[in-house]
Length: 451
Image (cartoon, rainbow, N blue to C red; front, side, top):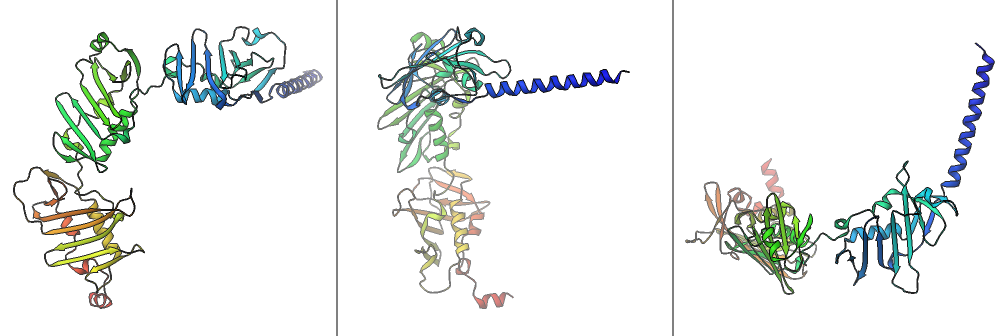
């Protein structure tokens, strides 16, 4: 074995590796020069033209809303347009590829794959055109330059992704927008079932098929889903033929939302395994997700508010309790502590016991409803409360709850503000005070006796 040759080869290899590293570092220092290719404020842009290989999109800012004007007229997707503006106004690059000169074919910029044109609101300011060439196979970054500039730079792949979307991605998918907080009435017909809801004094009531206070969360869920209903696809322009084709002449669901400013009507039909919808002020039939239709398929009982009275325990400011000869009245003071009104003198109120009582009343729910009651049973316990209106501080709502005697596992309960009664669990009676000691602090003597 010739050790001299081996050592010489090792030295040569070491020199070669060192040279490669030095060259590579030199190239990196030369190429990895971050900077800004275009400094153009997004707020100044009024119009955007985007040219892909075989497609052209034009967007215009109208009354503060981005709209597609080509290849069709439609509202543009806000997020998609804001992503373009965020990433190209200003346009930051990761590295400088060439200062000037060179063959643009090497970067695919002689025949750009994408052109982005930005036009200012101020017509005295020039438009800017950004060209994107081929992708770098190593990291999927793109070569880019300005039409009016000589620099060739490399930009991150996610910036290019914002420009490679199709027409559907650039369109706003919501086609039934309305102010759900302004709605005061909603009606729908689902198959053979009809429902009617109305809003009064900030509370929702079901009027059909049966009268009841409605669950706020269920109503809000429907209003939110309808006001933000999105298309999975835009199926066809509205016409008599397309209505027939997609089954909208005989829909599964017809729903209408009314407010002082007008109404929004949506019809939904099923064709095969797909669902199609049409809004009264939209000129296209849209495919939608099945779950929207399912929100209307529940029976009346699922929309009924089960709580005997709607309030939060911490909003109660006064409470009057009457059960036979046992009664008391209490009021919350300026320090948020509970004080007796009647009897005016006596033991000190136990704050925790009062809190537990109010929580039990606020959580009291129906196991069953008694509609159109014929005979009036005896409601031995009556509780009258004043709750501060959280939406209107200084104003109060009156709340009354009445309870009868136990009948098996349930107790009849009533809220005189509603024309029906409730059957609630008998355990509520165990949570109601029976004597003064149930709401007051124990005295020292009582504690000694207990010991």
